[in-house]
Length: 380
Image: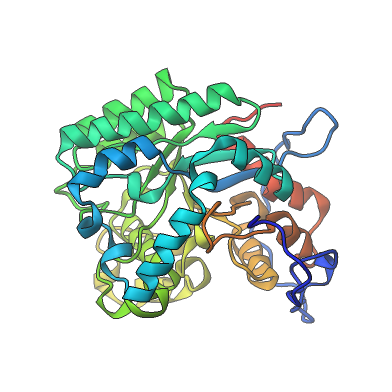
């Protein structure tokens, strides 16, 4: 199974999780401004819930329906991939098909990983913005109906994040309402661009969508599908390794600099892969905002003040990097994530969080599940 391992020399695996390499020897970095500690959801035995904010379900019926339409040219992760990467990806999809689409297999893996609840979202390539709007709505509805069915069958183990056809804002808002009001989903997953257009592009008119998300108080989980201009990223799986965090970085920068976060200050947007590069190199955009008039044509406050409104998952693969993320943005804005069941995911999310130096039990509890439970309305 993909979530078990024999002793392999990786200090993140096995019983010595508390002794991961790279414990910082220097003084603790300044913490983010203190926030009031929210109540942490707990199970019947009093243990804090462990909620995975970043995990995917692939709908096989939808995949079969899309196949005759040849979706590959619309998928940057497939367009910008060399022959070896394509071969490895095909094998991964074949080997992990049961994990992607069979809930009984998923539940066993969740138990092995110590996960109580998954906030399960669509496989990113099933956000089909490239189709004509009517078909996009039909696909979204099929994906969302199945997610709602999974939640209804295993309500103690899953909450759902749906998808909407962002290529048409009217249909997107209508399906968002249906997701939340009729199906009981806790938000939606979106890709960071719509057919190569940034989410703040006025041609898309997505301010109406963001306004409705804010009004409903639900979560946006923004997941990339490779970088859309990935001509230089075809080798070495770079369009995922580099491209996914880069796509998130570009998208978030537009949401900030184009004023989306200023116009909708109560949006709850969760970023995968620990927020891409921007969460770890934020000072450069703050400097540009001070130094250049073309960097503050819309927003007046420092860009990082808007970045502080986002939430970040724990997929850093390194405890010191995770420590830095927590120090900068606060333990109330970091959430456990796995990217289940893909091979670029974190196989031991609980062990990673437990290994972070100088992290109090209450902070760990918030990161492992309390923050997600608060954002997603999970009550136990």
